[in-house]
Amino acid sequence: MFGSLKGLQLCCNKIMLLSNVMNSGKKKKKKKKKKKKKKKKKKKKKKKKKKKKKKKKKKKKKKKEEEEEKKKKKKKEEEEEGEEEKKKKKKKEKKEKKEGEEGEEGEEEEEEERWREKKKAKR
Image (cartoon, one colour):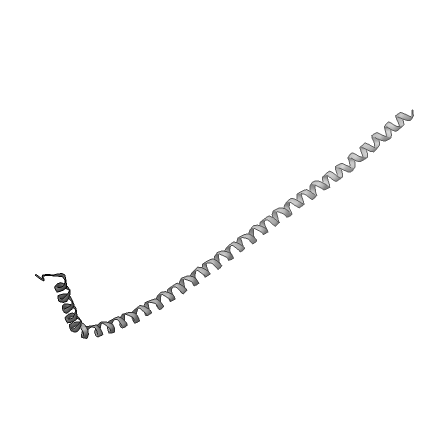
């Protein structure tokens, strides 16, 4: 059909030149459409940024609330532990008082036994 490779190349070059001439008016219109599309994309980006900011604020609020709840729980536990410790201290004091009284009586008995032993040793 073309006879050689050079004939094919020349034919292709002519076709390209004709297509460039035919499409030269259309290219300008396409550029304008692209610009409009870019503007729309910018609006979408702004909306996405706003959404991200809202999500971040919500996360921060949730974290703060969780931390406050944790603090409240800790305070309650400490108060309960404090009350339990007070009860334990009172019980210990009562036991010590009882033991102290018993201890004094026990000491008196021990002294009496020693005194008796000394008397026996002297005799």
